[in-house]
Image (cartoon, rainbow, N blue to C red; front, side, top):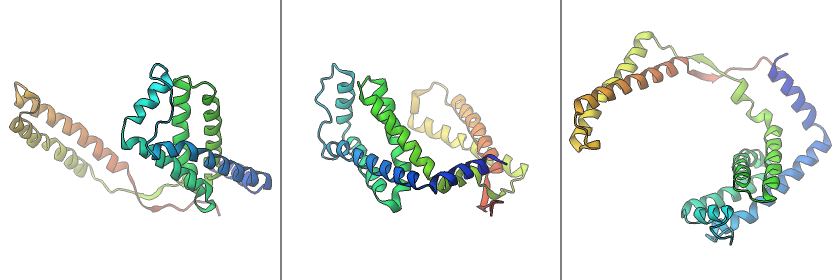
Length: 223
């Protein structure tokens, strides 16, 4: 029995239990509502805290407040994640959006010594992880399912890709010389370096292309 089958069995045995379903609904609503209040000050472009800059927490949030529309973006992100969590049909999207946000907040509150809050955000992060796990059957294809074919890349084709990017270093070097970028004393040498960098980059692109799965998602063996 493979890892996928084991996880399928665990997931299936949990999600069919009524207590787990009620608990999941509780966690979704709790986390969704918890994200709304801290999102409002950011959306309204109001300071999140009144702590002075001498306090690490105050220094961080005051600097964050001065980032302009990025501050508003964070607020809207939290609000959207909260709304998605509260709507049953979109709660899986809310969980996937909520989790990275709360992990970032949990790490932040721990690193700046936000007394008490670090524990709350850590528990919220664990709850977010639980919700992501609840949606395991929705995203497991990203890990366990592959596409049906590989690209039909020949070694000649791969060499052509590498050569194309290597050759791109020549016009790049000419452009750098023309605009005086970097004010280098020897642009011929710079061009050679750019050709070498382009070659390495092209090889990486060619190898990635050769190994890249393409086509439709392969069907699983499970029925």
